[in-house]
Image (cartoon, rainbow, N blue to C red; front, side, top):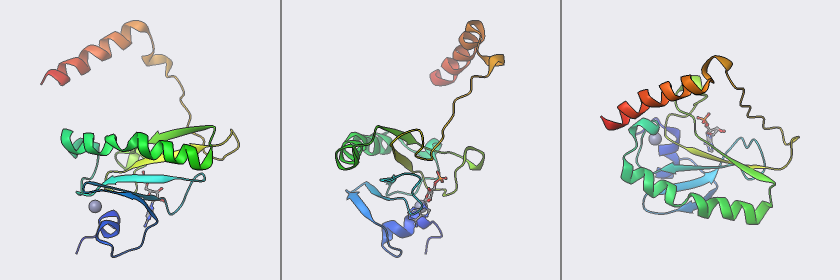
Length: 141
Ligand code: AMP
Ligand code: ZN
């Protein structure tokens, strides 16, 4: 018996408010929604995080993303929507089965506050080129 709470949802041993299911993925309502319509999309195969997903699993999962986003848009008429995906405890991951959050946004007072604060020490054009070069090397491996 699995200890993973999302695998238990897939097995049906704990309940969820499912909105979409196919052979490979499941989407259900987050039990502690940060805004109205907060949904999670998961692969049925247990993978802890993004590093473990195969290209095939990832393309199957992301192929349903526009469908789910548009259903949320039609149902709730949000002003915007954040897609969020946490990997590792230090990135805020609490459930270690890959999941993508859909967070419809209503206005600046909807309570969800993602912030992007530019780090001056890494933001010169030269430094950004240097960082990109390092990543390109890894992508060739
Ligand atoms: P994260 O911090 O990215 O790992 O997010 C985990 C999310 O899973 C949180 O938003 C939780 O509210 C949600 N969650 C935990 N347990 C359940 C559950 N049984 N059903 C639905 N959502 C859950
Ligand atoms: Zn799992």
